[in-house]
Length: 213
Image 1 (tube, one colour):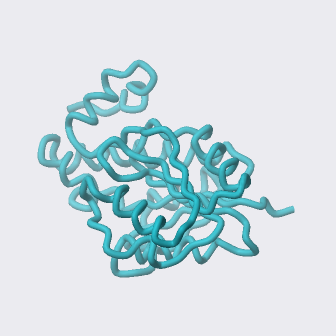
Image 2 (cartoon, one colour):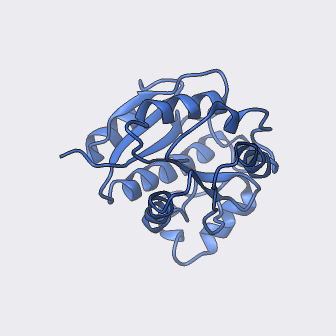
């Protein structure tokens, strides 16, 4: 029997120059990519623990050894992201899996604080009759979006990679008059300050134990 809900994880090639450009300015491209690889696998491991269908949506495509490793180890299918902007790619991915009104939750791959409890709470809120659930990030973006329906307007006019992403997204959702509660705020890793926070945090430092500066 197929699960009645799906979790999607968005990810990029975990290579120098492809991910974590702000972190790379301080740590260098190789180390920043290594940090991202750890966070990506941690995210895949986290979402694999639930009772939902899974999908890894990869950019620019699925042809990377690390994606294949995650797919094989955690039994998660790979999809290529489709679209010229992040908003287009998210919309396409959600539409691919949003069938028969069954909820879909999409998460990023750079938030060590994102837990299965957040995902389960998103599904609970969607089941309670809400249209969209957002998981705010400390930097003004969001690390999770859960939906029971979607409209392209949700992702239009968003200043991606800025502190206005959450505010602009909520404004678009309000224009649709949809119910959109938010989960508790979490912290993702974009800067050296973020990375140092997790290195100093007793619940998360073990994730990066094999990485040295």
